[in-house]
Length: 310
Image 1 (cartoon, rainbow, N blue to C red):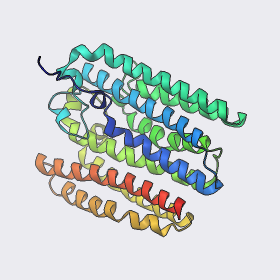
Image 2: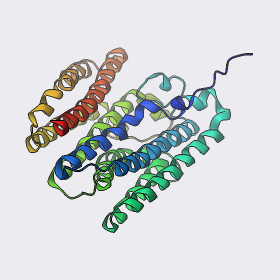
Image 3: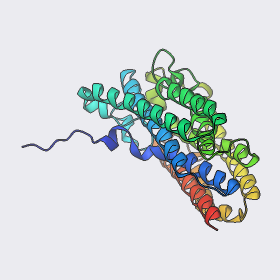
Image 4: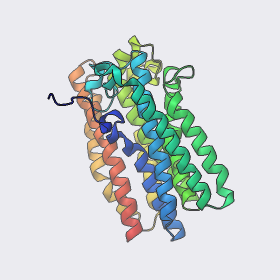
């Protein structure tokens, strides 16, 4: 009997990318616990259920509609941080199953929202419902017609909102707190990290997006300006982190945790500002920038957990 070569579930849902949701949920929860001194495990569980299931749906819908509309190809999917999974290109018969997975993610997200409503005070109910409705809409219509935000130059706004303020709001409200200065200042951080990753992926996918008429921000403003914008966003990110470190008790530890991220970031832009006409240098620089953002997410989570436990 021939072994089944079809992709596994972790490939279909692009499981490694779920760190983009795990990241704001962890630091949002940790910050709320630092402020209140109380941890609500059921709140954290249901918030994770909502965030991860809706992100999973987004990944699968993204693969389906990008493949249908021609922006995902075998060549573009070779890059590990952009271009989709390539599952439907090699296994088109899986499309109906992928739709079921994406819709199941929506249902699980709804159930998680209902769980949060059941265990929380009534004043938080509108927040949970609003977060679910906005996140569910963005999950599908980031790429799906007729809205297709990422094809109309609005995908970057959706990414920033979903993985920044919306995710932090969900995590904090699940712990019974929302409008605290520390939480408000934290909200842009995770959105900026995910936005930089999105722009980075667009730089790599530029020739494929042009062919598919997928109008991302990089196409709208050009490669060089997109690189400048990424650099500015990185500076804003570092400044935001310094402000958060100032507000946190023992916040100096967060700065120490950020050293690997900053070193990799500098290396990435040395490549990116080297020669944009050389594809090998461009891929090297975008790969390093992606690595620096992953290190940033891991470092911030580790820093917040260290502060929480110290």
